[in-house]
Length: 229
Ligand code: ADP
Ligand code: 5GP
Image (cartoon, rainbow, N blue to C red; front, side, top):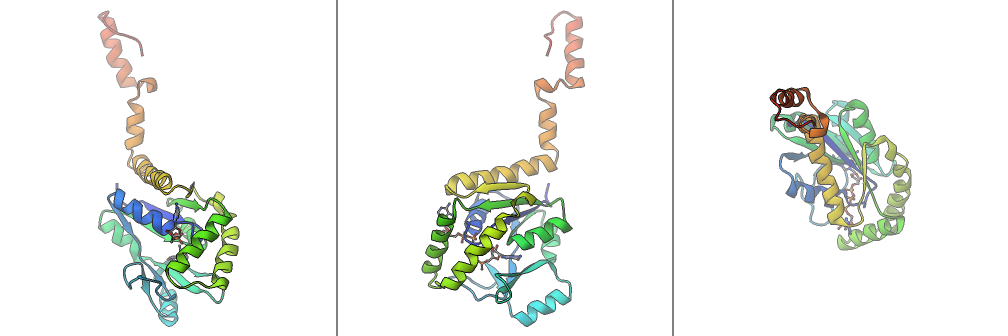
């Protein structure tokens, strides 16, 4: 069944983008919401692919016009705006797909409040040391190392971890393959629950002893050929 909203959130550098891109190559029927941001493109990023890069004036116009499902000023007052267009939900539904959001924790909390049926997943870095190493490696690879930006991301990470209990699922991104497997399992399990397939399968288990099964077996027993379940 299409129409499930998956929110993937975590401190910056935990590996959300990496996990999301692997998940999308493994699981069909997922539409990724391309966020709007006022930050500058990094490395090989392209407008309309990783983000819709926009100006503060245009972003503020969109806020005033109510065009966002959620938005946040990420990394404090000197930071940048990031937001999810409300239209993303309808777009995915019409395309018959589930929607995937990769957003920060403040944005995730807003969406969970508005849409409590959304499935929220928190990605936890294995340790502060590993998180710092990943942030450094990424910024070096993209030639944008800034100690102030790094310190800001690390201090935000601690605050964001405090919100973990608001999320339905959490997984630790230590071994990439393991974390991707867990993420895939969550998506498939939630699809199974929400379209009733899991409940239907469970009702057919022998230990569920459904009335249909028991009646059928009883009819054989009457003729002396049955076994009890
Ligand atoms: P986020 O989207 O959460 O900010 P990224 O996906 O950009 O994080 O990952 C941050 C850095 O960590 C990237 O350089 C990425 O290649 C690396 N990374 C992500 N997951 C793992 C992992 N399981 N093991 C090692 N490195 C990882
Ligand atoms: P980055 O600058 O590293 O791409 O992203 C910084 C943070 O902003 C990440 O935690 C990322 O998940 C978050 N982010 C990206 N898009 C959105 C969005 O649409 N809304 C919110 N609230 N956060 C976002």
